[in-house]
Amino acid sequence: MTTVAFQGEHGAYSEEAVRNHFGADVETLPCEAFEHIFAAVEQGRADYGVLPVENSTAGSINKSYDLLLDHDLKVNGEILVRVRHCLLRVAGDDDAIREVRSHPQALAQCERYLNRHGYKAVPWYDTAGSAKDLAASPAPGVAVIASALAGSTYGLETVDAGIEDLHNNFTRFFVIGKEDAPHGERSKTSLVFGVTNTPGSLLAVLREFAERGINVSKLESRPRRGRPWQYVFYLDFDGHWLDPKAGEAIMRVLGQAAFVKLLGSYPAANGVLEDETAQIASLQI
Image (cartoon, rainbow, N blue to C red; front, side):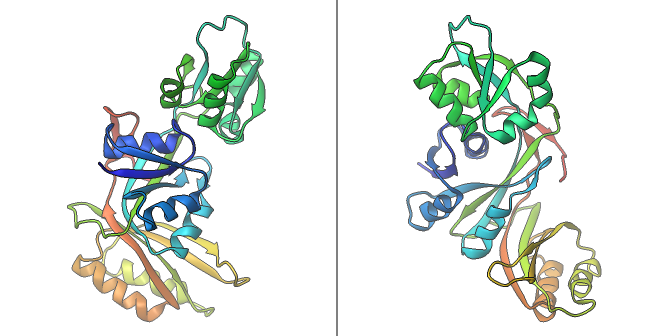
């Protein structure tokens, strides 16, 4: 059976992404921190890891990208999941809800809903963790914000679903593993590179893709750790490094850039997976 590592408690949105991608029968391995996902795969305790890299409202997750640069694991795939927050409570609790616990980001994403109902927001270390702790220690009049998976995992009752203020709340995950993904029909490639501190150096790299008709779907700079005021660039483009034009562009970039690291070519996600049976097709980020 395939084992996949993720960050958080059972019932986390990352575990939802794992099950959407690998199926309901996959073995999941919860990890305390992002670093532990990489360690689990490198040490053979997990076949793959699933790592959140970007949210449509909060932007890129910098820690994830730093770890991708530091480690030699390959990006094998991407998963797009709509984040649907649920209000959960202990079944049989008839007290009026007065307090809602969850991760600060989830509370912020449901701020209008909480204010409209007059609920007191109480920060917790994790969305799924708030569900786990409430199930273990029931408290009258207390609810949590977490995923539907967390509710079913810990036997909590769903009071309301889809309570997020913005419904275009999506998270992009990378699947990471030791081997390269097979060359699929519709691929995407992620790489990281640095350039010399000279005029036109970044433009020269980007021109290699533009001249070959290759679409660059993402470009983002990050400070290079340990080297003040130096930056690296994370780039996604449509295609596989084995495609003739893409391979040619990468070879040319190797001559233009200060360094290049290919994070992986992988099957591009077709759409946003909302649950195990439905998806919204053709979303592009």
